[in-house]
Length: 310
Ligand SMILES: N[C@@H](CCC(=O)N[C@@H](CS)C(=O)NCC(=O)O)C(=O)O
Image (cartoon, rainbow, N blue to C red):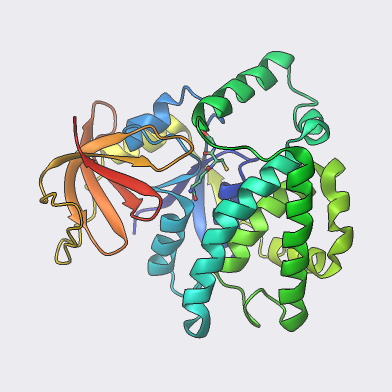
């Protein structure tokens, strides 16, 4: 098997979700550190446009979005599972809530004036301004919760998680599921990246204990890799054969059509390529890049918009 490469940066919550899954599944991986704001020419050489963090590379296959990355990791290393059979539907639904509603409430809380001051304490003022401009561009059209509303929402959500943890060691049972990894990452940002905001956990002591158990999974075995080497590795690899036996056509778009895919919201940069698979939960595009060669870029269906290119 080709090695797993994660393109990420340390303070990225969705990357922390995947890093912990590496730890839980005891996987070895290569770490490519990417910029947290545009431009990201090395990321875009691989994805063709998608710029969000993280993305995972295995040879010439590029997986966008942490939900799809987790599905792929489950296939590569099924045990221990992220989707226990008795709670898979619940786990995926709680995970989707955590990756969206909880994430946005927590980040509005985390990066209010006090949290942002701590997060950018060691950065020059230009860096903070550039970050603000980049995220404002990405979130065009989205409503951002104000600090008072976000702290009220976060307290309610913490109490709900606290109630779930009164029943079992992890959110949905005695073993972790994707719900735990998804609920953890935004709270990790509060506790680790902006600890000045962490007094909110006073209402939820079980949540803190659960976070300690999650953190104990660690990040697996990692080694550094440069972006240049990762791109060269893609160029020297052949994409894995695609699963085209299942073709679920919801759009009237035939396989082989030039298409574009973009996130529904927040960072809607498009990736263009030839649609070579449209399975039940994911799409695959084939594209050619001057530096990365022929790559297959994979996206989940949920949260993404597929259109005929142009
Ligand atoms: N649905 C995506 C969300 C990814 C996401 O929003 N990541 C944040 C960082 S944690 C991001 O991309 N921020 C802008 C950037 O890194 O360029 C996923 O699950 O991977």
